[in-house]
Figure 1 (cartoon, one colour):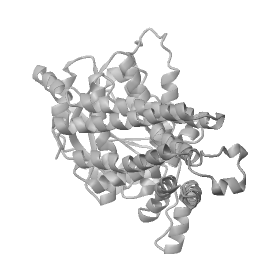
Figure 2: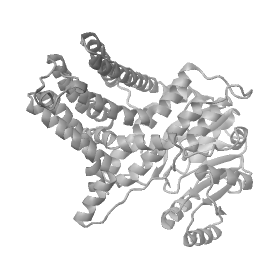
Figure 3: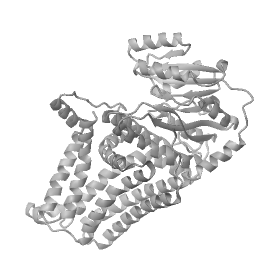
Figure 4: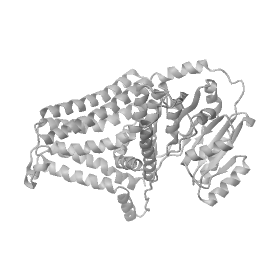
Length: 518
């Protein structure tokens, strides 16, 4: 069942206002800090805080703008629907499922479900792209495909990841349209092809993406679903109005000729984002349909989430580099608009922003709390007895503390009716900060995009050590914050100390999540 967009003007006004207030407060404090300081050391802190506040403000404002514009997408889509004409003839369609060392039973269950798609039988062909490296999986899937008349394609060398498998399929398949589903997605609406293909009556439409969601699971997995829900409910509709909606890799349909025009899928970790950008560069159109047709397998463990977020951030960092060094001189590529530039840059920077920014804000917060005496000239005695700079920092510390708690909670309560999930989403962003940042660094250094985390066992001691090993950077960082927070409180800097203790608690949540949701 799909959740419709919230259209109450009051809730939208309150949400946008909250983003703007936070942005203005942060920038105003930065300017005041810059005006009030008198030492070189404090100028460095003030300028750093101002730069971070401006970057943060950019993302807050752009997010608010996207949220505001998403309100108008249903009307825009309704106009397109009214102009659609019935298909005179059904085109040939390839329904594709890429697989890599996955559970055979899950693959078989979901592949069989895809065969229930309502469509003319002689116009649809099913493909299973098996990149698995385990022979027992290859053999079992091959037999399954033979039995159920599914084309089985196996590669011995997995070059180009999922993109490589899809590009390899193009050599073997001749269908006009390609519908892609992930191995763990269970089809819930068999009208998928009948509903979406009419939109391709516009010959310039290269792909259509639908809303993606996970099946119901635990409180943890349902909270993870909100990560994608924010993107698909608010960001995608706004981007679709600019023709920059992202093809999300599955639950969508691509026109083969458009894919061939851009040279196939770019062979990167997140091939879908790269393809979306290339499609726009070649002046094709795209559409986003805010409707759920399939449900993915819930993410039950924090290790799964960490692996997913690592891949996303690694890929987004690659995309950012790809976007910034794109060759505008190619004749077939267009010069994109300013708003499209913002869309693509915010997408590439998005997870980097969420990760690196919270870490940098935390580090600068430490310097602000201990800003009474410059560190470069501070003795141990001074360090232990330094007094707080003034009531302005005290007020800022309290307000930052309160806003950091209530903002995500309010937004999630408004749109998803759950205060507890809002708090969990907020904590997850802190718990993933180092993981995302390390993924971005790995992408910049062109290191392997793969990353694994140990799961330990049900034995308490081993489980603890496993969680510690997986979260060593976060535990170390939070321990330092706890020590500094205690020192601040011992020098009567109560709000500053609580501020640092709060940050320490947030970063230590990585250990908790690895331990609790292993």
